Image (cartoon, rainbow, N blue to C red):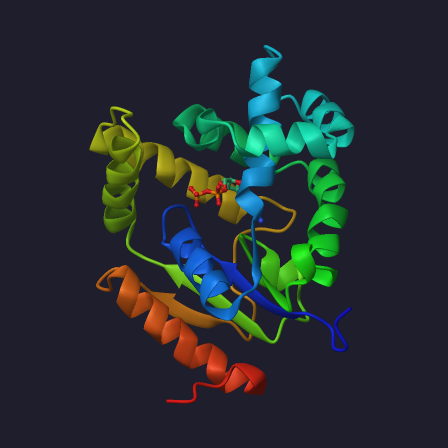
Length: 227
Ligand code: CDP
């Protein structure tokens, strides 16, 4: 059992801003657990689609979110279809429903309070980690990049998985998802007041990682760089 509470690193940002890659690298570097919270909303969206339902129908989304058990969640989180554009779109529709967010809240809090495998800390990435899920996190980062750069990254990501993607369509889908995520009433996408804003438009993954580590070292003395 850990003597001190886990150290939480909160990472938020819009679609394809590079937050997932950064979160994974930080978790590996510090030996922390990582939770891709977008995967939870994608899992709910995908489950609704698989049932032949409509993700924009909040009653259906709530029913699915409340019934989701750990085994089903693990299966959906490992499903390659989770990263598809229909699942992205469905995720942002179900994510606007307060009762869906509430159903996923406890899971995220438990992960942060007791990271799996006794890890001494956790990196959570999403849209509302610094503002709603872990406002007490000592290190909060908000990752951005221009819409064009993000669309280019998403096209490359999809193509690397063998999924054909058209840049203009991806850009359009991403912009409408960003608008929905930023304008929704509950837990809208926005930086916490004390978040470090990191624009990765002109940075590669290594450069973004270095900037993040140097910010985190100023916030968490136990994670200070030792040269
Ligand atoms: O990978 P990408 O950044 O495109 O998306 P994601 O992080 O997997 O999130 C998919 C969708 O889930 C987002 O568009 C949000 O609507 C929703 N989401 C959310 O509302 N809150 C979170 N903490 C994480 C994701």
